Amino acid sequence: MAGFEAGTGPQTTISATTRPDHQTRRLEVGLCKQTLFSGLPHQPLPVPSIFPMDIMHLTTLNDPDLFLKLFTGKLNVYAPDNKSTWDWAIFYKNNALWNAHGETVVRAVPFLPSSFGRAPRDPAKKLNTGYKAWEFQQYLYGLGPTLFRHLLPRKYWLNFCKLVAGVRILQRHSIGYQDLLRSHQLLMDFAYEFEELYYQRMESRIHFVRQSVHLLTHIGPETFRAGPLACYAQWTLETAIGNLGREIRQDRDIFANLTQRAIIRAQVNALCARFPRIKFEVGGVSSQSNTREFEEAIGYVFKPRCEEYPSPLTEDEFAALKIYWNRQGWPNRDSWPNAICRWAKLQLPNGQMARSIWHESNITVKLRRTSCVEVGLLSSQIRFLVLIDTMQIIHNNSTRIGNVQFYFCIRFGDTRHPLAMISLFSPPDANILSDSSGTVYLCDPMTGPEGLLVVPVTSILSVVSMFPDMHVTQDGHISETGKFSLMRHAYIGLAHPSPMVVYFDDDDDTV
Image (tube, rainbow, N blue to C red):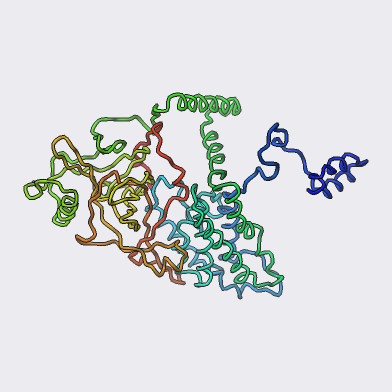
């Protein structure tokens, strides 16, 4: 590149007399074939600086391929190395353990919100049958730290958690400076420890240290240079390609059909740009009947089912409401008749639907029980990250998790107060949270009156998943510990509220 910058590179290659001579000179000066971007009249950044790092394929295809081959003992082995010394290969020659681990992934799927996208399939059965990048994302970076906690030797688990913690931070669409420094340090520590633990400076293991391991140490500096890589990731392009491919209906003239679909999409985009408040119904025919909107909570809509006649709260629920009632300073607490109409679902300002346990407990089909949503933080004493039936709560700047039991409304004159009754999970195990570099948020469901809390629906922020913690023995026996682990959507920060699209209920999203 030095020759190119000095202006001698092009002259050196042009003066070549033969093709082999031209290729040799081009290699010497670092010149390559011209790109489309090279012809732009104005280039704020030159080639190759204009191209940011691809975080999608690096973290969800390249590194998962390496780690699963390490854990299953499927990497090539060269003398004098021997696979019997690979204490990290927990699934090597242990099909019972590998199959049981795959079953734990399957058991976790019903607890993943349908809005999390495609759920990971059983890796023991489907890993070699087109396992998708998003499945690896959900499997390794979502479920992985919790599911591997009881399987990997501790030193390898700690190292793996540093990888997950660093990648999770760098997958955000907005990253604070201190978080950027922390994530970079986590990945630097991971890469150094990876060589110490796996490679061990053995010539026969040098193929363990793939380029994808080293590239992880460049994500932080690249984020500092170009901004959060989630904003440039290939997910959008890959999704667009997949959507257009699924829209093709005429096999006889595929490209003509694809052209028409692209034209329709461009027309819809133009309408959205020209009329920002226009709404497109996705997934079915909209019905405004049996819904309830609130002037006091713009954008929040109660959705059926709803109780036809008011019914009383339980003693613990009534006690929780009294606490909220007193905090709000509402009148007539003692004369209130203790009767409400429960609502099943809540549509959030971004168009997503939040369900409740009261609704889901009466559904016989196996659902993916929650739906992922995120709402901006509101100014209130209690702030939340709500789940569809599992909700994350920020209370006095501390994070808590809970289940939405049901939604209801209290009225005083012409003023209505839409509320949600939730049951909390305990705070996370501090030792596990610290040891796992913040990747394993493990807690217990709270029972009794101390676990119930009434909150305004305007506190709802984002849906998360709480999936069961499972222990697997070496002979493949699976047992649940009774604890639950938190999993967030990796890119939910990119899902901004939009009035243009209304997403209908996903009760048909079965497991």
